[in-house]
Image 1: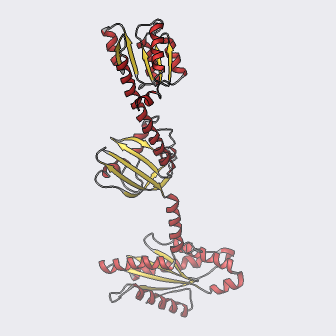
Image 2: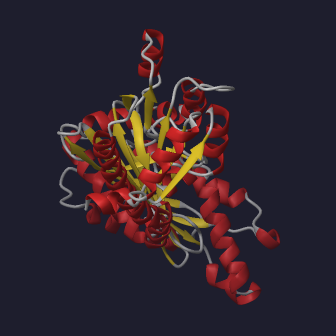
Image 3: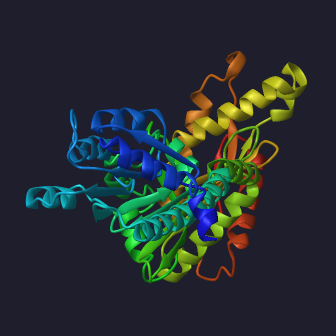
Length: 418
């Protein structure tokens, strides 16, 4: 195992004494993969730049560039490469400088070959295990980069690790190259929650793992919806955060919900949506003793429009009728297509007197409007209101339907109330 590990090492010897340098090279060549020899610090630095080295063994006192000066240059490019110093002289300032340069080992000449081999073996082991760890990390990185969801690991409000999806979303090359991205990400506001940032959620996840739907803005300011999951690792004091982009899924859900609750032709509430809203309004009105009124509309002689102008014109009339009513009611009122040319409206917090006035204004607005093809139409309306004895909202609808029948029987283009 020991010899196999040494066989992995590429060593650079920097020694101005040719005899010592050649002897050490010959000795190590029997044990290691490759051993290169440089005659001074300048030559050693050039050799280091040309080929990756695992270990450098250098003298201190040399012409052109001494060992410590060479080490300073090498440390700029490779802060962690093991460097062993061998020298015949001991000077305090050399020792202090060597410590500052993070020298791995220090040897007095002549070299103790047994000790040197032991040290090289330890270095080889460390490099071997580091390579194994790097390979595993690369594999983990590939696996995580393969994930479409964003993954990041946080510690002390810093991003320690993240995957490719995370970098692409925020348009950064790496978290190391963009130190400001740590703070920028943590301070991202959650659109769906007031005064809440990613940092707030991460801190909360230390108490319990997160599984929340959140909206955040991408680098272009566009809102995106994510399912956020988190896991807290107490021993490491680290938080793993996963953000799955569900924006398209949410949009599909919204469209499906719209299709299920909005009338396709007129783009107002459909019957099912209206009844759900009415049920909630009815329960609230009963509980708090508040007024509630319902109006049912029917376009007069609508069949004639279809027969004379065709169904396309009839559809346009229905759309224009619906939009005219929508533009003339309050936000708190709910309007829907009931079926065919019939529409229905409930007016919350509105008693029968105010309902009659409001609906009469709507009838007049329809009567005075010029529809497509310069058509002028009218409508009949039936009104009912919540009574104390009503056991369900259906009773109010039934009375509105009866009132509509009365309006038609009275000659149409009028409002009747029951």
